[in-house]
Length: 183
Ligand code: ADP
Image (cartoon, rainbow, N blue to C red):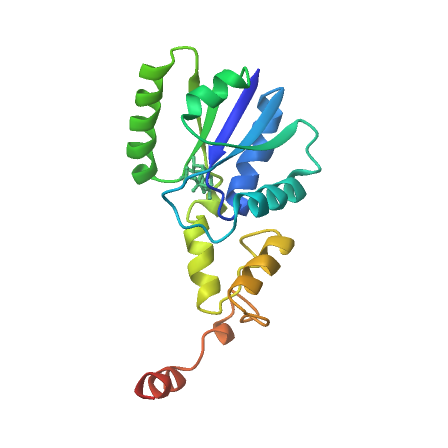
């Protein structure tokens, strides 16, 4: 059975990768499909994202990386896939994802959406969270693979992010913050 894992992946995170790894054990082939969405202003081009995902999944022989535009169900049919994989992090995801699954069912009865619950340690993680942290100089080394962290730091011109994400030393003293704000 072939499964499609569609998304923006701008950029791919350890949460996405955890889902891909687990899906690759459930299906014969998993196609990670990057949506070409003209309505979004991405940090990385589709080609960059494809390269990033390929590099992050090269150890998984039954995972293929591709891009598509238009309806996901049409793309799935083209690939002769029977399943769409979506991740669920919280109840808020559930509402949106259930609506999408129902909508897709009205477009094609052949395609089933399979939801995988996120692993606990990544339940807070999203591409936007990663970008937000990096934009303000924080470390994202624990959230994305190393080559992607470098790409992101480069985008935000951050050569040396704050070092330890869970150490209190990473947080600048309050005094400095107020001085900066006053300045
Ligand atoms: P989209 O723009 O379609 O939401 P994303 O790249 O943000 O694309 O996410 C693609 C899929 O991966 C979605 O089903 C989303 O719920 C899931 N996902 C995102 N982050 C995580 C995570 N940390 N753990 C598990 N699944 C996730």
